[in-house]
Image 1 (cartoon, helix red, strand yellow):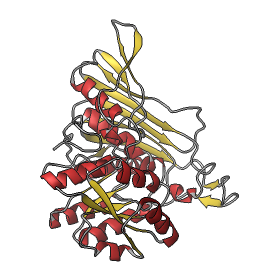
Image 2 (image 1 turned 30 degrees about the vertical axis):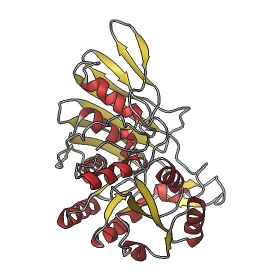
Image 3 (image 1 turned 90 degrees about the vertical axis):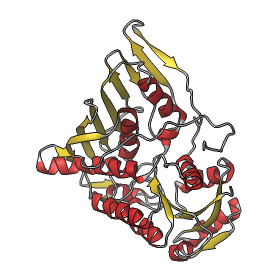
Image 4 (image 1 turned 120 degrees about the vertical axis):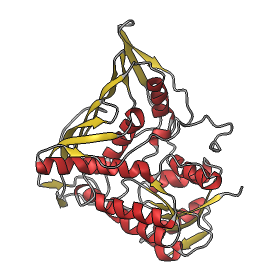
Length: 369
């Protein structure tokens, strides 16, 4: 089978690792075209990575008959328009997280993909890496007994001190739940299964943020979205989890992610990463033990989910990072706000089945059939 050709829309900060991995790690992908509103960014990507085609508009890119999958790397509030345009043009779509800025956007995209028989999915794909795949196998093999619950915390004081253009993190489509929540919710459902209900409380601790990074030092940003969100997730399995995301708190290091079982506790690595340390506590040991990674892709392997979608397109099997997952994640994340607004638990209506676990590849950069 020939390579699956990718058209990239958006050449911003996250694009660097995608450019590197599509052209250097995943052998069944070919980066065929790039497009960005700032043409010089697209020109640099084309020159640095030998991309055959450059387009001035996304509509021109969508019209290219050679392109199989559109890779949507635009900002969160732009995801819907780009993905919708690509689907309408008959292209499969892989999008950076989240699927949409609202649940309604996600619903429209899913309906359109179903109507046209197209693949739709997206980030995060860290759940496919060595760290979380190893954790999933440990849980499935009964290493901590029956899963009882989980606690996951993403704690920081925002992005304005280091990001070159952080305003969008505090605008429509932003906030800690929509920005970092996809990693945590995706990890949780891959370890524990689908979510049944969400109960949340959301606050906006600071009405404005001052950028202290360059080049926009001193710029005042109005905060449009909740930046301190916590809540409880009831899983279909009966397990109960806590998720806390904030841009309002000072904290010295990565906060914890733990899964509790009837016979032990698993310390899960940072879900924003593909690898990381794994620890287990069992009562007979009475101490934490570090466990080895037993799956592939422990390094920064962004575009792994894209490569998996490409393999699905080639073989007809299901894609692991498909909309059945990204939509469920979107519904769960937005449910925290809906629950907070009405002061009651929010029922999750989408049903989720965990995708097949990863298979250790015979050759690096080539996924399983």
